[in-house]
Length: 162
Image (cartoon, rainbow, N blue to C red; front, top):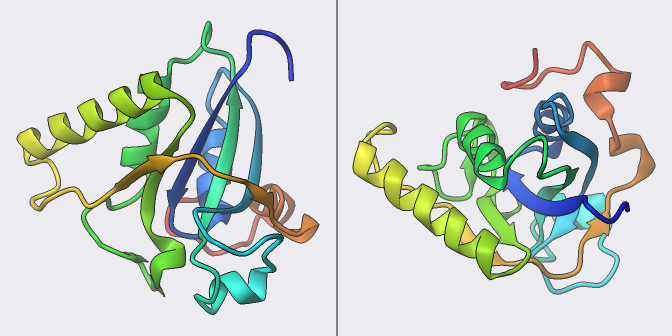
């Protein structure tokens, strides 16, 4: 990773479409689908999907803050899923599909909490924001076939994919 690039980690349901949406943003250098927020080392997809590890399907975003701000990433994140549904996005149900911001440092934590408060006040979603805000722990990359999945499989069905 270059000296000026930063990392952000988000969970917003199935990671296929989330990764694709972040990948397309100007200023995003790279994305990676994976698992974070759980207790098991090196979790496998089947374990995470079964809800056995506590991990969320997540996306690690490497970005250039000179081209896209963390605030803009948060704006995109909240625009690509429903942050009012606890442990669910569309047909995907379980804590592995929760809405979460896994922050890398106090500045990201502060910005995430500020964005959530503003969204709550705006009543944009008609319900309380249930997005978890937690420190970024170990990020375990998902299996290779999950990486850039939508880009590889244009016919993939996903609520937020173009």
